[in-house]
Image (cartoon, rainbow, N blue to C red):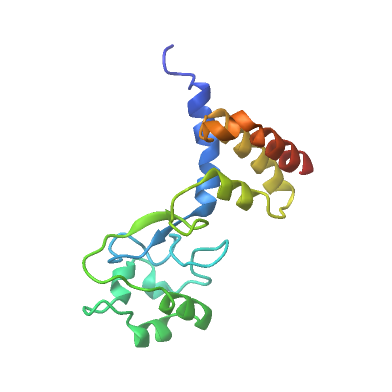
Length: 168
């Protein structure tokens, strides 16, 4: 039956998807596309979501926290969020003009995914479950051919694969 067995490349991409989920977050533009709760948008390490939930904000978008003058509504934020969340939100710079929200790779300053930063992220200390996830994700990224050709030629990938995967 054609199409019932996905290609090796698609299976690899599907597995590598997990590493993207760990490092992707929203960069706030106008806030229209970002749900306050349940989506990664806070720029802090590892957990890009709110810590603790307030029922009143369950269906709200980030745009409801921004004033018409493109500034954070500080009184509302301080009243509705725990201090750690409020401080994190108020620390986000808002861009002027009508800028759309965009998904970015948190672990690169320009917000663009790189295999190097993915390896760095995945090689941090981890528990047993993370190790098995990492082995699969690294193999999938390498197999899917998403690593720059020059790196494959110089054998860097072999060294990285041996060093990090075998440590788990």
